[in-house]
Length: 172
Image (cartoon, rainbow, N blue to C red; front, side, top):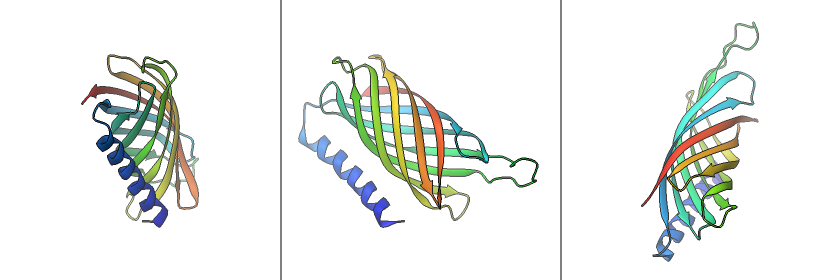
């Protein structure tokens, strides 16, 4: 694993631990989501995955989320070449900042995450740098719908997707 990826993953963990240990009154949430995406990279037809997101609320409008899960890109044949692109699976580990535009802490939000995509399949898959800007809407009931672009810079290129995340979050 590259040094920068190790630094990013360690930094995300340290930030999460720091915020959880410094404020007793802060709200903490856990969300479970399903992700479906349309790849922006040739050679893939569909992406699907799931994730778990821990969210530490600094106040009602600002949160620090830490997300991990699994994403699987389904390969396809390129043209009529007879060459099938192999599936690509990775474990995304990201940390970021989530801002709600409504003072109530629900409604429309913007989210920016950075992290690492740890390659799982095919064998020998590399770890890449992840970035994921998102917009979404969260209801006070716990339902959360978000749309994001996720880029994974791996081996000389970027594997990208536009994804929809449907999730449910609950307070800890």
